[in-house]
Image 1 (cartoon, rainbow, N blue to C red):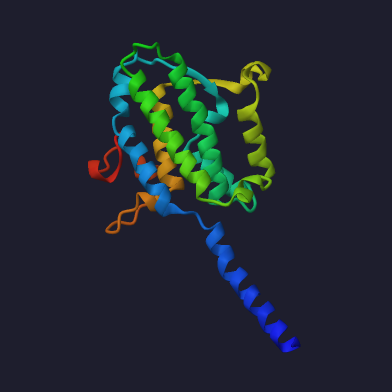
Image 2 (image 1 turned 135 degrees about the vertical axis):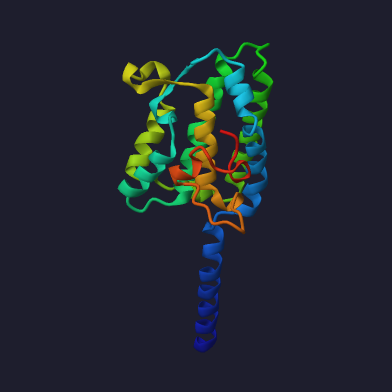
Amino acid sequence: MQTLISCCVTLVSIGLFLIAPVLMAPTHSSMCTPLRTINDSLSHRRRYMKHNFPIEYTIKVHNREIFRLSNISRMKLRTEGLNDLVLQRLWFQVYQGVLKKILWVLPTRHPSRPYTAELERRFKDAQAVFMQSHPAEVFQEDLPEKIQDIWDSLTEKPENMPESSWRFATPKSLLDNLCRTMYCLFSECFSNADVQEDYCEVSHWRKGRKKDMQPES
């Protein structure tokens, strides 16, 4: 009887060992379709976020919403135990606020409003898939202290923020950052089997790249 119990415990332990990595692994296959849909919209950002606005037009955003590849690099270097899932969570938090702010400044009949509203809808669809792709307890885990500080500042009420928390940025530059950081954090969805590309490297996005190797910038 004791031998039977020991065998059962061993089998259960093996089962948990095999299941755990599957539960924690990012479900890139389910994320890729909605992210590529976002990317389709972003390919038109020059027209809707630059040509339809006055020259040098800027909007007011939180300084943490200027979220670039360099921010990701610094976080990885300075935050111990930081993983891609945490950065992906932060990415969704940052850009849901960015899209709301762009929409907020657009009058109802502005030619870029339908485009921005559709982009926000696609972003929310991707966020919903992201939430469904991981166990609920993953989103209840404590964030690293530095990431939590950023998260708290993003969710703070605007009226409670000091003036130093705000910056001005062009709508197109914000969507450029959205696109490039999306490629970096979800690179599996945009990888090219024939060419090895590091989307987290700023050099990849420099002008002069072949058109088919990067989205419109």
